[in-house]
Length: 521
Ligand code: ADP
Image 1 (cartoon, rainbow, N blue to C red):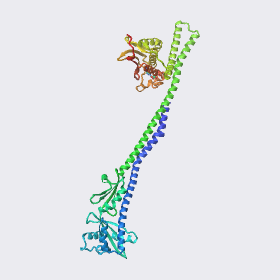
Image 2 (cartoon, helix red, strand yellow):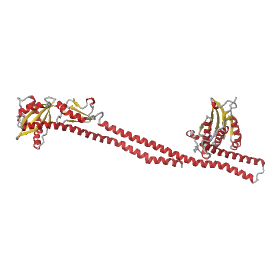
Image 3 (cartoon, protein in one colour):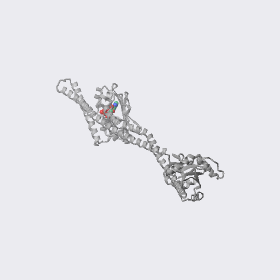
Image 4 (cartoon, helix red, strand yellow):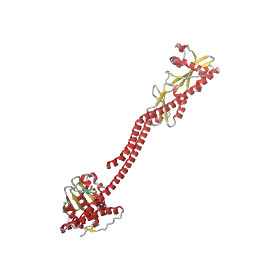
């Protein structure tokens, strides 16, 4: 019965809360690495879009240059004049070459020793990229002046932008040679700074040498770049991007960790809440059980002396007993059982007075040894009836103490009662008093069933009874005795201690502090 009651809330919590939360956590945590990858991909796409916009910007700039040159050409400008004048207007442009197309020196590879070294290099690179160069006219016919970026080996700083032009059916290839670093620093950098803002670092590296040519923030040059791709028009330069402070992987991981942290926190709160709930439900069910046990135990305890009293009284009333000695014995039994009954009722009433704060103590000088002797005298019949052997070891030198005689008597009776109730075969009892350090003590020692270690602190709780063990089951009680004793001891500024071993016996010790004891010299 008890087990079912205790397991129910546990099972309820397990199935409705702990297992679903656990499963949810496992699923969430395992899917976090997928989420991490997804977030990484989303970030990478966004950064790609930023790089695209920079490339597009460079393309737009050079397109406006090419449109400008085309206009000059269409206006009938002289080729040599345009080649000479136009670069002067744009400091990043080093050289302009307008080559009528097709050009034999390029298509057939005929050497042109009269040309400058740079011009020869331009033609060599155009020859090496012949089909791509020729295709520029196909684009032009389609209405799109495509610009191709081609490196020059002549000087690592120089690059060229190549595009097709047409005037009155005549075709030209325009090779615009620029100082790549100036182009990056003067044309692209304002745009890159604006795009980077506070959150991104944009960099440009020279691909062949690895040299850092530009960074939107030279203070926080990232060690590894998330996205790095060749600039469309400057293939030997890599445009890189990175969020400020951390890599995308770090960002994704940070998010994942934060999520895990939150999940763990929520789990923890749930578990703590569940534990509280479980404990309070368990306490409630234990209290309910304790209450019903209390009623049945107390009824039993009252019924036993009552039935004895009525049985012996009836026998006497019928006048069947003639033997005076026997008669006396029956009266004595009736008297003792009535005493016991009043003891039980007193315990319950005392407890109720303690609970409602109405218990009062009347302090006077009390001789502890005298209290014990008087209790033993009263219990003489009871102890004899249970075949108890009693040993007395009272310290005759003890002084009186300031206490409530009635209350101290009650504590001793309770402890002797328990020693009798919880003794099995070895019916032996020892009462000892003494002085130890600053304390006077009373010990009640039995060789009874003993108390399991883990129960030893609980037995002083009200209603608490040890339900394990054969004797504990049939020895009836209210579970109030020790809690009353403890209350009385606290009122005397003392304490109750227990030493007990299961199956061996128990020692209950009442300890009164000496400074509360008035010397009676
Ligand atoms: P009860 O009315 O059950 O005796 P108590 O408060 O006096 O209530 O004792 C609480 C419990 O402590 C008892 O149910 C019993 O299990 C245990 N106990 C008390 N005294 C002894 C003892 N001398 N030996 C073994 N167990 C004891």
